[in-house]
Image (cartoon, rainbow, N blue to C red; front, side, top):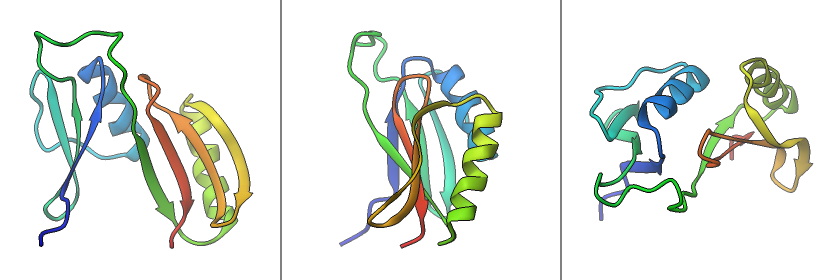
Length: 121
């Protein structure tokens, strides 16, 4: 069976979200369409922003997703990403703390979708 290779994050403003994720992850999208913008995060694997159909798009439609970024196993590496992202003005949901799987923190994108940084498994 094939493994998942497309991960969609639902957003209300694709241009705003594209700018946010391009800056946060320091990557550029592979293309830009009015309601869909994919980033290739590994060969054949896309992380994409999607606003949905224009006839059903509403700011009140719930959007929820947690994106994970795993960094080297050191707490210092997690703290370094936190410092860099705070410098970019992200919204912090959970400050760095230790969990059963290691050091972690959570920020939110402009739509409230969560982005968790943690150590590599």
